Image (cartoon, rainbow, N blue to C red; front, side, top):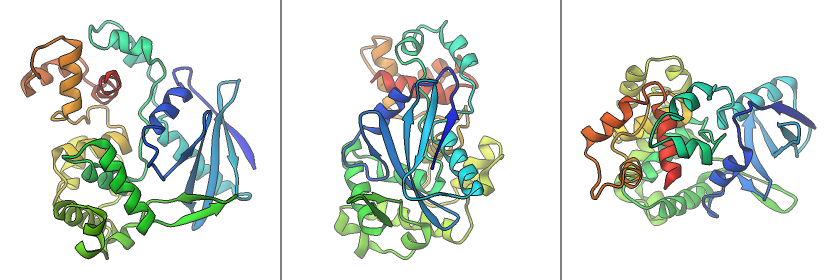
Length: 293
């Protein structure tokens, strides 16, 4: 089964693929030179699909493991649009950024680069916790072990495709399960607490949808282990709140230091001052500053 999704002019599938290729240890999608494959569970069924770019500036969607219903197709289209942030109109951002000393050259160089998100809020929060206070590649190592051990998988044409572990599965885990994967005790504890919050319906994507940023943050931060950085990261990656950005993030600080040719990292107040110019587009300003690194 094949169909197409139309794309905004300000979209680069190549740049999205480059982001998805960051680590060979990533198990939640499988990429080739010009395509990406992903496994999703939709209405209780495992759906394996492949995305490739078409010459008519659309995404070709190929369902690899059988036909799907109309409702499943609609849910898949919604997921893909969220994954690549296809519904956001970047024209106002580019108009603002074109006049900015830090962002001007970046939007020219990376035109069409969008937030490759994590539509699954549970996955987004756990990934943020896994990445705290360690380098990115070791975070991918932890994620790889976690997904292999506790996620579900589908074998198609002798290749394994994985899905992120469910909150119900993770909520039953203990240090005995996670410490052998090289989780710290803190990461183990916080991961399980996040899973328990989702499994009990204390937190859900549906509960946060449509809430003002501060209210959504407060709700997420009722989970022990979810602080300001983690909440902002998840709200940026899952919901695209334009003003959700991790102010304390070292990458933002390093990018500003490099672009402004400073001999030290900027203070938090200096970062706030820079971002005042980006009001309403803080998340995208963050994305392009990260890309500069």
